[in-house]
Amino acid sequence: MKILHVISSVDPKGGGPIEGIKQLNFPVRGLGVQVDIVCGDNDSAAYIAEIQVLATSNTTVDIPDTNVIALGPSYLGYGYTPRLISWLREHAREYDAVIVNGIWQYHSFAVWRALKGTATPYYVFTHGMLDPWFKRTYPLKHIKKWLYWPWAEYRVLRDARRVIFTCEDERLLARESFWLYKVKEAVTAYGVANPPANSDDLVSKFFAQHPQLQGKRIALYLSRIHEKKGCDLLIEAFAKVAQRDVNLHLVMAGPDQTGWVSKLKAQAEALGIAHRITWPGMLQGDMKWGAFYAAEVFCLPSHQENFGIVVAEALACGKPVLISNKVNIWREIEADGAGLVAEDTLSGTIDNFEHWLAMTPNEFSAMKAKTQVCFMNRFHVQRAAERLVEIIQESK
Image (cartoon, rainbow, N blue to C red; front, side, top):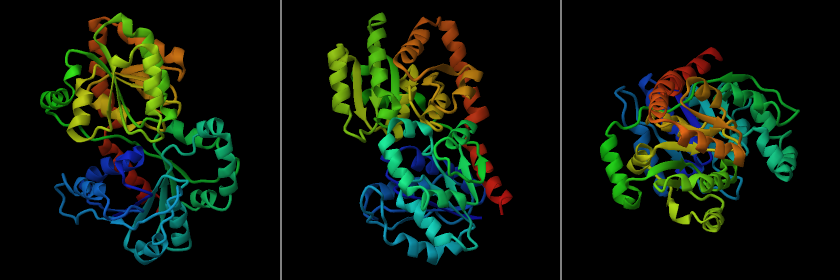
């Protein structure tokens, strides 16, 4: 089988969609599937080479390397890529399935334009982009999307062989965004691969870069710095509990996509906790895994999160997670006792912190032991790869 992923950009700052492709690539290729990626980036972008290396390594199956085909430049916030439709019309027949990653950008509409009426099936991962939280939070943007929806994205989803959701909650929530909604749904497992095993070395590398964190009880946030992630709630909640232990420290790691960091730093300064927050920016590779292993808990009080790859990564590293009930895998984590769940409010975020800090050493150790069991049973990427292949084969 040969699969083509289509995505607006492979820039790792884009978060979940490209990370999902990277995570799936190894086990899918291990099943004998060739994977290529086409995007709207310029082929000179530095991260193209990084994605190419990540996409072609760590497989023992003798199949061709993954190609990353960059067709940029793309234009405007919409990611308009003039070469994409013609490229798809020329090459799509070479693939057994085309997978659209994300919607509301030109690449999804281009796939529909290029493949409608052809023998090549396409599938869509919405990656949470139909969650009604966006409708409630950005009503003006939702009105604009409604103007676009009937003649574009509605058709993209309607004509897809399957629209694939990463958990049951995401599938149900997607039905609430637009009344004009007709899709053939599928739910897949989703997850991440095993983290690196050399945890001590990775922690040492992380502390070498951030020596002020040694000896601290680290609460780690690692995701995009974005309004929907609840970063402001996290800072204010941390301020409420910081006096309980002088060693408590918050690490806010991630790319600043909307220019919000300066306001968040000002918030921390006003609350008197600026010296107890570290802002390392986006962490990748060894630094990312070192941060996970160095932390005591992982925090994500999101207002909307269709899956949360970083949550699965934290569990894989043996870290209890403090999350909101808007992270769509919260039911599984709560059922397994692998973390703490509360409302995506200030009081809910404070409750998670207070519950963690009130735990006895034995209680916390018991929760830590459940994190990797939860990860292996529910969120290991091998099952996600097998399920994706199943969906494609079943829908032929």
